[in-house]
Image (tube, rainbow, N blue to C red; front, side, top):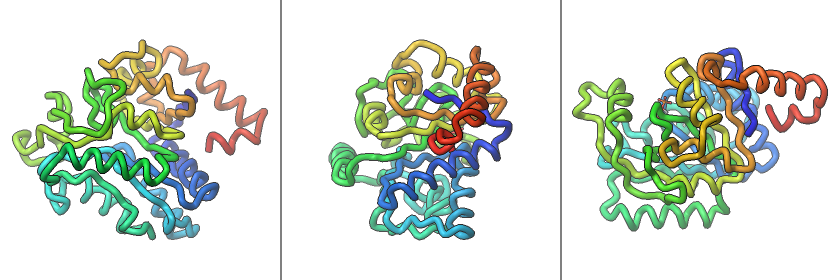
Length: 266
Ligand code: PGA
């Protein structure tokens, strides 16, 4: 795991966008795994800027989103499909036929989930997966207790997630109770993963996920088993890490001594 503690949300977002851009330059037909929530908004802004100002090309890219609320229409302003259109897809040259967001209105959810997994396999698997982390340690909507081998399926949200997400709805009652989500096992098959977290509210769970034991009670902790994860944090989200000084030192040393490795990190 490479832990990079940046100074600010802006710097975190810029680094994430640079890593994605580097991936697209290396492989224009990359398969990207995308996340919603407030965390990646700055990263998507940067990607839109790179597309508009520097011609970053998404025309051959395939995308798969992590999750979607059950029974929210794609046109609902809190659906993840709507979020992705507003924050990214409407502003870049991605081919709509290669964009995948779980369909919250699927009539047969089980069949849909099998199809979604098969589509990811057909596309050759996810090259680079972007993740946020929930206050309860979830990645996608894999709430505490999710099997570390789980696949795309229907999940019931925890009370904490419903409360966390209530800020986006008029009333807490409107927050959906269920979601279709990639599983922890699905996410772990991505070739490379970037986990993003910002703000003091994420400091405790980031410390648990990165420096605590691997447990299904904190889904994000399984990322410790993945061979290629970069954790990008702002200073607040990294503030409870016991080895924060060491992670900073590693990043600075790599920048200073091994300029070639900057490519890997940025
Ligand atoms: P947030 O959500 O980015 O809005 O904090 C993250 C998540 O729940 O995965």
